[in-house]
Length: 636
Image 1 (cartoon, one colour):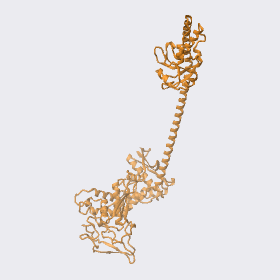
Image 2 (cartoon, rainbow, N blue to C red; image 1 turned 90 degrees about the vertical axis):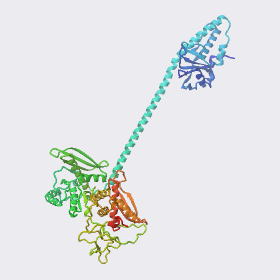
Image 3 (cartoon, rainbow, N blue to C red; image 1 turned 120 degrees about the vertical axis):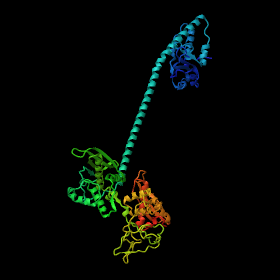
């Protein structure tokens, strides 16, 4: 077998190994390549690997071996090494010996037979057949040849070790450059990723800001759409103005500058009428709130209430509610946000000053300024100014403010007639029975005729036209309106002029029940006088069960007795925070609507439902579909 010469082999450098690499892992990485020899370079005395190794392959397998990329899990670089630098050019003493020494040197470098750098390069496995043949080849006989060959072999080994030590520093800068290039590429990629992430975050922030702006615009549009259309400002009153202490108040609503304050002529006329109005106000009786002369629109609302009290004959009165409470009710109804700012008053003015803003959707609609000797007085003055601004802008009608300040005395209300209605033909299926909002007026030329006979079908023991157990007022006889010839008359008798209703607690010393308290609260609204008078009659009927009945229970009993369907539908704001409002509907067996009514908006859901029941009872009584006897205990 021939020994492969130096030109037939190729030594390859394997760099990038880990310190604990083994010869078996090196051979396993090159298992597809026929290796002639392999060696791992380690530190002396069995130390760890210094990071590279050498393998010897046949020249035709060098390209295949250089394609190996991983050894023991690490990425490595494999490239050929010039082996001529490791072998001495002259063979030393003796030609045969020199040739043998060169072959031994080549075999020592490739296969690692002998020491390495400082004795640390150990021979590791897998010497090829050519190396074995070179090692087993016989040397020429003779002492001279043997000595010369040994000397040449020793020199060649030293030169190979020196060449290997010189080749390692030459390869290290290349490896460092590759590592630096890889690190730079990784840093560049990380920087690019960070820049992309920053750009994405900026884009997300911009999108969020745009969405917030769009939401704010939509909310403002909804608030503007929900706000009532501005009405014409009310004319400034020139009469019925009370004297008032100097209050530093102002208001500015969504009006033109010329409309924010009354014209000078109007203010002068109002000031001139103050002495005249003081006497009229004293004669009127009720102690209404005193407001600043500058709040002319609020003063007009108070004048309207004063006129109703004067014409009510003791039936209508002032409930003693403060104007700040009325403003709070208006802000809750129109969903306005009150933003007060308190501080010391101006020099030469009151001690404290309050500026109150009413805002909606972040936009200030009304501003009021007031001052006083205390913070409470300043806040009340600012509330009056804001209420005047709401009236001036038309956002709050004058009737709402008057209704909030008005109370109705149920004891002086007229009692509905107890005469049963005349039979009416049943309505067609699906038809809606219209209800008049008030009793039909007496036609022109009608004559009131007194009748002492009871109505047909009236229960015995009841005075005609009155609740059971009560006598009519002295000199009073129930009557009806007789229509003029050729004119249709009302289906039922109109309500009586006056009847005495005793207090709710029929039993002396009996405490008021929650049902009575609910009726009293609804009575103070002044919206359903006929229904409240009927409820007082229910509470004073003499039974314990009657004292515990609410308008909701009475309406449910009425519907059950007449086989009607009573349905309640919530028509308020739809929010759990209120305000709440309900619509009650009575339908017969054919689905025709007998009566329907909607109650006011209240802050408590149960009170709103009771108010809707009272509104439905009022619609039945005023429309002639029912009389008070239909709601009393024992009615059929």
